[in-house]
Amino acid sequence: MGILHEDMVLVKQEKEGDPTVITVNCPDKTGLGCDLCRIVLIFGLSICRADFSTDGKWCYMVFWVVEKPNTNWNLLKNRFLEVCPSYFSTSEMDYYRPQNQQPSPPDVFLLKFWCTYDREGLLHDVTEVLCELELTIKRVKVSTAPNGKVMDLFFVTDTRFHIAASLQIQKGTVRWTCS
Image 1 (cartoon, one colour):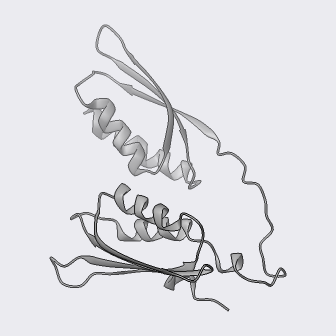
Image 2 (cartoon, one colour):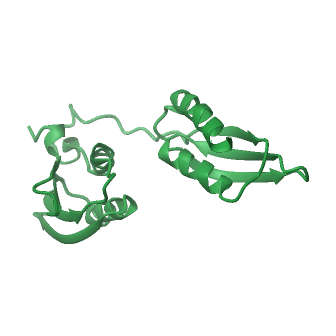
């Protein structure tokens, strides 16, 4: 009946200094290797070796990557799982196949950022925090008053649907950024 969801992507760290081995075992689709390589590079990792094997329906991929000190392996694994097709895409059993529904476009939220003074790198710091919260920034409007007060408007989408929790974290972070 396929393999377990947890076993589709395995991350194995051997000895320190050796590359980390990421194994992907899932149904194949066009461009899957490129998608997975892109995710590895977005995480700032270097691919030192890779091996791809497919029969046209199922694929097995191994990546040897050089890690950064603070790599979030669970998040990387989740991103890989999001890109990998499910077992149902290769199944001939329509009874178990999930219904095809068009995903609705994500809601756009407006985040207002106020700060009593402007400083070099403030916009960068706020943007970095929003990206760490996995919010996608669609548009930014930046305003600085002559007295140095800052008001930034961020139009963001939350593809993880955790906007309420993200806003709580962001409020605490904004206070830290401004002080």
